[in-house]
Image (cartoon, rainbow, N blue to C red):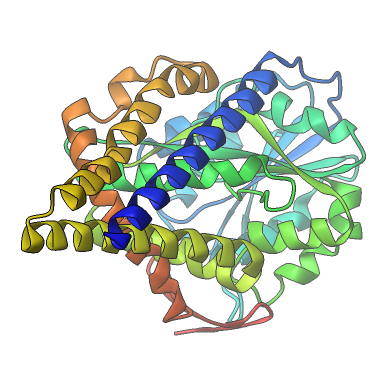
Length: 395
């Protein structure tokens, strides 16, 4: 019967942590949404590295030209002119002369393509640009995106501001729903002063801080942009500031193989470039896996011993699933407010959520713990073997 008590104890502690974490996240986001942006709008440069064509690529890019920001430039970067993204980007540069430029970065034997594109784009920064923003090509940005991302940088204690992604789940795509859960769980770290991290899809930094933190040096021989930038900023004693209004939607449809590849990449990059955060994620995944093992073991013993007490412990334990589904459902109104649009049609159906939540308890720990076994990542068709934070091999 001891195992039953322990399983119930783990469940109660887990439920308390989940509810308190949700309340803390809600309070932060609610307060941040109510905050007016600072009247701080220095000239900014948006750097956007591209490879291939994401869904709604041209539409996403054109949104950046509609920003309600007084003075900014956009620098696109591709590895080669044969890249499918080059032609539409070049046409946009011609359509917006003086506003946008494009650089063909080529390839570097010891850098990820994205990082090499970003470093080469820095060469086109206009001399009077005071802020550098980095954006991914799959980001769907509202017209006040840049205003909100830059405004907190007026506070000199803030080293970098960051948004985050909200994956739009296909209603009938169970793997994409599980990835959405995984991604939303990670958003909790953004409000933690110790573990907050910049997300490379939407981050901004003052040019002076970028140079003082020697970010370009950190990116040399690197496969990662955001986690290495995070570490460099924190070494200066500066903060990573999450801007709730810069949470952006991203297309979430993907196959199981693509999602496993994506998750593996996120975890391995974190492992190499921000090990403290990786160890925290590994710890949480191990606890989730342990809880799942105890759930099945309690059920097995209950059946074997025909123990009503163990059956009761089992049902008390699995009651955490309805709690998690409830928290997901009540958070929808908050996400609607954050994203600035009605996104109810983007959410997983209730019945599919009821399937996905228990399944996530089984799948997510293994998706996370797999990063213990390898340092190889596959990124847009290229395999990188991360030997260390300063050494990688392109295979």
